[in-house]
Length: 275
Image (cartoon, rainbow, N blue to C red; front, side):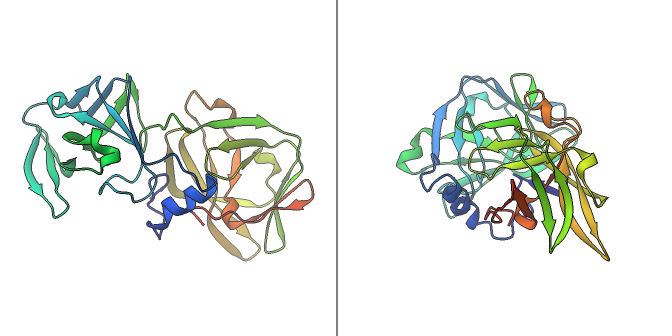
């Protein structure tokens, strides 16, 4: 199972954009399309599918005006797609052309698409091709990308803190720390990463894995609280990407499902796509 920005655990997908827009102060910067200086490549296993230094970055969170694109991605000129890799074109009712990405040993159905007549504000994407983030591998320069394109209008900052943080659930104390690391990510509530030794309950490993382009691959744990197990309440990045090394090995509770008391003040549970 995958969580995080992949939206797999969001049960009300149409609300994703609305909730993130509210967290952005009601004035989101998306949707937008802008040229990118980054060298973008797409591969099917080891086969090159597309290679472009002329990519357009499309930023959107949640369902938007372009079907098929729910998160930031790149659109590439048709001439930068390797000939013969896109087969079996189908045009849907919205005027979107879909292709299967065909490799020597594997194919990805509906793995590529093009918008013939995008909205005027996104007209720069007309005639450009984008690709699925499932079954294909994306690269920015020589670095593999995870989950979706990185949005240059978004920041992730971390700061060590001496705040007194208590994590509670239904009156039970799950963790308490005075040495948290706070992570601030644009449009999302602060996350409180705690030393594992400050967790006071048993953490039960699960099979859940989440992927974030700004942090890396996270493992998840359930929490045993007296006679019940609360699933997938805690995550940690054992080996975060180089841009965020300070969160390595720390644990974070899902704010949306627990009660945080910070410096004696009980924080409201935030409303996000994962609430």
